Image 1 (cartoon, rainbow, N blue to C red):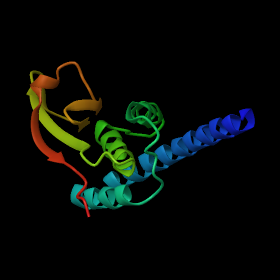
Image 2: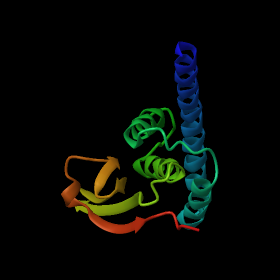
Image 3: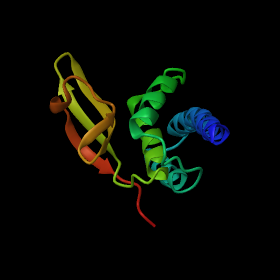
Length: 147
């Protein structure tokens, strides 16, 4: 019985290590895509990525969000939009199809324009929370279309 428990623990650990590599690869891929092509094409690619690839429904969404946040620090220009798109891909792969990328903007004194992106799932912000969220006006909410 103990050997079986040990096997499941090791397997769970390895799945999470693999997930970390997938997060890093997705962060790089989305960042490069945003540099090279219009947002509409990047959005199409994100939708496709969300529909295929390994499923990690056994991993808590906040664990994934935390690692997306941490690993994005290693990606040049790992912006809020990059993090939000990557998290959405992984959440949809895990079965959370109602995860939305929210894109918002505001005018701030001293700065002409400020934009921000985050991911919401059932009204809860999973990544991208900032102190003055209420100052942003939502421009669009995007879900991955269900096929």
